[in-house]
Length: 307
Image: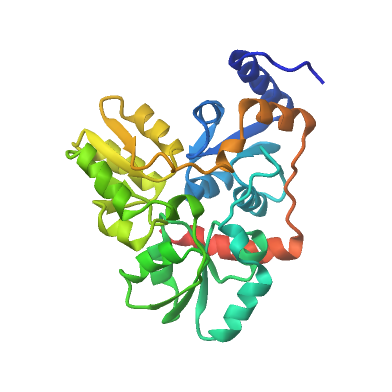
């Protein structure tokens, strides 16, 4: 193994070299550290990464994010080696439900179709009828033929969708720790500090936070909104990593997080050094058992088929 790099430049150069040796593509979620986003070939939210993964021509995919994202890439690309940048990078919300728990809920609501937020394990996806992301959750729910939908595991996103559909949406009581800690008081205080700013929050936020925002949008939708809007100031209610992308894409505009607490510590585990180590050692290989993969792929394929 080569000796440890001592600078960002050396780390970047080593990553570029390893990409060639492994015939690898690096994918990074919008919440990753700026340096990690900068070395990625593809950045995006969960839906964008899932779509891009199906068209990649390479031998190795390095996913800079958390485990459920790497599982989704592995499910859609069984012929490729998928490496998770940091093996311990998980998602507390995804851990709030497992396949056994979902099966119990399905027995309680036998007439409901299961729509599973992509922030979930492969085993939970395999027990679901459809997957969705925050960007297409409403369209997925509307596409379901059933009048009842069991929405797992994010109760906040599910509640937001329930306000825009006539279907009965049954909410599982999970939530994102990062988004759930944002409060209406945070929004009101931020508005006082930046009275001319447009407030954009993620639909994983509490209902009372969404009520005080100008729009509830996924990260990809926030990027598009900010790019197309004539406004110059924005308050952002999602994980702080997105602010870097927003500022890079809109140099003439200003972006502020609503609260300094909007940090996902699992997302921040990935550093350039960790990426180098993972690629050199080909460690953190994500493998989804075939029986689970096929069930989860069905739910993901249905998600990707919804415009």
